[in-house]
Length: 144
Image (cartoon, rainbow, N blue to C red; front, side, top):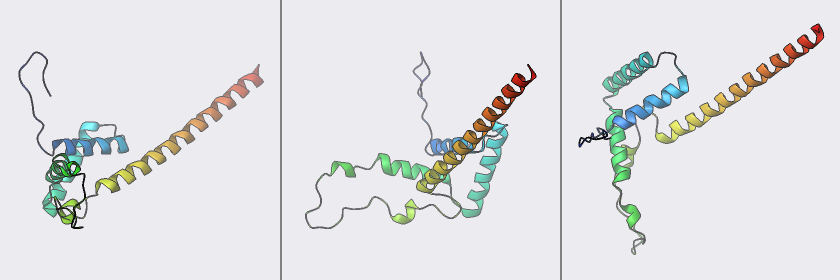
């Protein structure tokens, strides 16, 4: 991020983007009326989970980002000749979040389900509004 006409460049701390992404996702899901209060409650909940489980989602997200951004496996186009798989960058235990936190795949599935539910509900509301408009138009025609 840079400021126009300035030589200053700010760097986003590791894990901060993941925290904001999680907050944004929850705001879009919940559609709160008071976003600052919702954000405060969201971060309080994260702090409580961190204290209970000794797990920091910001650190975990930073490790995942680092793993994917600094993964040079795509440069090795040839398979190993001896038939052995290449070295792993991290163990499976580091990829799975502890209990109480969801993996990116689970979050994506839940997000898609929430989108379907929201679309169905909005469609229902739109159909109800059209019915009301039609009935109002019929009543006005009858009154004339």
